[in-house]
Length: 513
Ligand code: MCA
Ligand code: AMP
Image 1 (cartoon, rainbow, N blue to C red):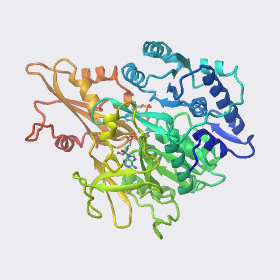
Image 2 (image 1 turned 180 degrees about the vertical axis):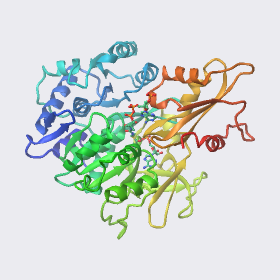
Image 3 (image 1 turned 90 degrees about the vertical axis):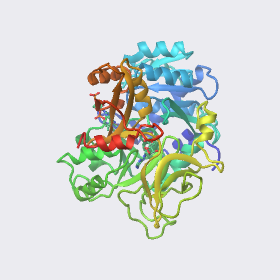
Image 4 (image 1 turned 30 degrees about the horizontal axis):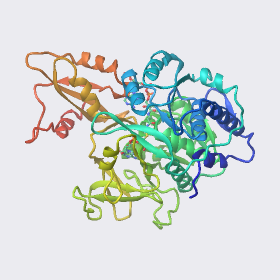
């Protein structure tokens, strides 16, 4: 694999006829491949005109739009590092990310310009632009004065392309550094593994501030020169209505659960589709089975991480490494992808017996460069022989299928978003009257899993659970807010005095049955 700027690999795959439609939006706009090339050139020229240090971070917190995707592609084209931020993050969270990543440029939604620019300039950011989801804002105004031709910056495989913040069990988020090589190798491999066809059309219904929507979906379509039907926000009825014009859909399990609740989801309506992919969170076997019965399609479940992009996938036709195994098996995340080495290990570093459960470790060209400015933390997460510890617990069966059975990291995945109990507990424990708290994940029919906060108060003090929730809502992204908050006299502890979250999960698992 020669060294190549990821943008060049994507643009090389554009169809010969650049006037064909590349993106069609749900509000009636369409963008040709030529539009994408010209728009990314103009924004890349704007970035070049700022004389930024090489590999500057470009932090972006904007609503989903085609122009936001153009900004991502232009950042690659200009050779800088894209840092997408969840639109639900509030000022405390943004302050941390900007302080940690020290971006040279911040692009924010016009409505947030006031508080974001204050945080950015205080942190030393040189430029703050705005970008609305309706093609307004200073970024496009400034880019309009620049040429629509641009020679992409030369980038090597090991050069940074993006930083994705993902927390660990210990509170603050870590910036996962993904290189041009990580993402290009994964995109090219998935193009072949998921058998992207010439006339495939992708329905893009995911946010574009995480790996699934920003890399797996967008790279998947672009590296195959495939049109995208672009939904600004997931709506089950709208997504289903697009099936007759499309062939590929990618979603987190919640999207499938919500579409199954729609009477318009029928076999006939899904007949034109070729491939439904699910990931980011466990797909319940009930959802997998119901989807198969309702639509005649067998969802392809795959497994990935911010640190590794895609790791495993159920088959999409014949996988020569597993002859005759074309079955997509519900409840599994399929085979390690070509180029990915996956092993299941005991805590003491020995491999488990075949079929046994242990910690999943991986190696491959898709595995990230490390955590931004956290070399010690990075070193902890890699073994001496170079495998990345995913923090996931699983097994590989005798047919080679990988099953994820749990996580050793304290993590809740809610509607496909990661929620880190340690971060929420930190905020609750700082509240007056709170002695200690534990946030656990419990099953939820829509989001799959949601947080429940269990609190013990200081002696003689009463704490109002609703007040706790209200205070959290003022500080944290909405998807992180526990869906239930209870005050109890004591928390179950093991002999070491450690809170036994497994007992709490058992006790509160019926909260949203
Ligand atoms: C919204 N709410 C949530 C969530 N989303 N609560 C818990 N978990 C969530 N994920 C709450 C809001 O706070 C709000 O509550 C109420 O639900 C409705 O808010 P709204 O924004 O309208 O929610 P929605 O539109 O219904 O969003 C649900 C969603 C969204 C469409 C499932 O969460 C989504 O797009 N998830 C996809 C996440 C994703 O892209 N994951 C990929 C990560 P209130 O009114 O009280 O504020 S990448 C990854 O994991 C790896 C690499 C991989 O393998 O892909
Ligand atoms: P993130 O770091 O946000 O990319 O989340 C990655 C985590 O999501 C993985 O470590 C897994 O715990 C989880 N995950 C991703 N895909 C799946 C899947 N198909 N089934 C179960 N968990 C998954």
